[in-house]
Amino acid sequence: MSDLKATLNIDGNAIEYPVIQGSDGPDVIDIRKLYAQTGKFTFDPGFTSTASCESALTFIDGDEGILRHRGYDIEELSEKSSFMEVCYLLLNGELPGKQQLHDFSYTISRHTMLHEQLATFYRGFRRDAHPMAIMCGVVGALSAFYHDSTDIADPDHRKISSHRLIAKMPTIAAMAYKYAMGQPFLYPDNHLSYTGNFLRMTFGVPAEPYVVNPIVERAMDRIFILHADHEQNASTSTVRLAGSSGANPFACIAAGIACLWGPAHGGANEAALNMLREIGTPDRIPHYIARAKDKNDPFRLMGFGHRVYKNYDPRASVMRQTVREIMAELKINDPVFEVALQLEEMALNDPYFIEKKLFPNVDFYSGIILSAIGFPTEMFTVLFALSRTVGWVAQWNEMISDPGQKIGRPRQLYTGPGHRPYVDIAAR
Ligand code: SDX
Image 1 (cartoon, protein in one colour):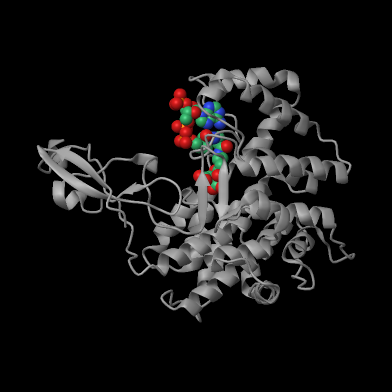
Image 2 (tube, rainbow, N blue to C red):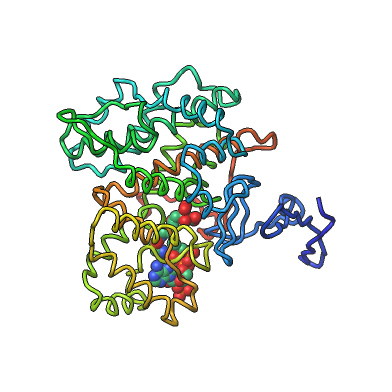
């Protein structure tokens, strides 16, 4: 603990608060005693200047465009690692050795099947239900199935719940796609990789063998790595807040899925591709940039801007390179990629975007790849949720295992009416 202090002069009193230094990034002012000492709250809607917790999982430097998981740069992880290896790293803090990775992957593969009763849950949805609505429902329903691991204070119960969630998300996601298509569900095939298994469950059919394309498998695995965790974003904060009450872990992840669905968050990948398709041709880009700058127009460039990154989102750079590779290797020429490249070029040279430090984020290019692989836009946020599940469960484990953990309960600035006596309806 440093001996740095911050002094607050309030009501004529100078009160000192400790300043705590992390291992990287901004220091924090420890104001936990502020209300008890001053009777006043801080006010920070949207938490733009608030650290909600300590965490050792992910570090982001928005000004430098840095993203690291347990100290490893996302650029290196996306190039040299695998999603299973990144899952192990996030959950355990270190990159696994060969045997550790084998054992972890084997453990995950033992949980890829769903209880047969869960398959009937899908039948209750309309075929045109948004797959994120199905994900919220089915993942939440998992909390009704595992009575053998409900004690979240037990590390072993937390571990098997975490493994079940990571293992079952691909199966649940693929089933949501199949249900929308009116095709039969495929069971997992554990001879395949985690990502290959997901691709087969999604695009395979019982009528013929499915051969995983290694190029697509690698691109998909890299996309999973890029979306795995991202500090205290809205959906992760939702999982932490839900988990802080001691709620069932499957229900907490369902809460995270609900939050991620929003177009300002994980729903932006679907919205970004829809926007690029609406623009259609490069000559229409200036009109949309003008709309994005117009204060009276609610339109925003989807896939642009970020609460933390005031530089290029490092994930977007990797994603853009992956688009080039997958287009070349699959011999696909989607004009929407050219629109994306020219939109990025024009926006990054526009004073409005430069002044507000608006750069492409992870969602700007991801939809182009996912569309090239064959996913409909409605599935894009489902894939984001599939990948982010490891981040959610790692953050949830970190919070629950913190001995100082307590229920999250923010306060407010009250602006409602003062006290007044009840008025009978006859007198109203
Ligand atoms: C993700 O938090 C995370 O880490 C999230 C995420 C993760 O991995 O978990 O990285 C994933 O959610 C990425 C973000 C995806 N969302 C979008 O692409 C939607 C479009 N972007 C915006 O809605 C916005 O940029 C946010 C929501 C991402 C960030 O919003 P902030 O930090 O609250 O910033 P803001 O809305 O206050 O914007 C600041 C200014 C505003 O103008 P002024 O009021 O100052 O005049 O920039 C403008 C905004 O109008 N602005 C944009 C814009 N984004 C912000 N103008 C045009 N187009 C945009 N995309």
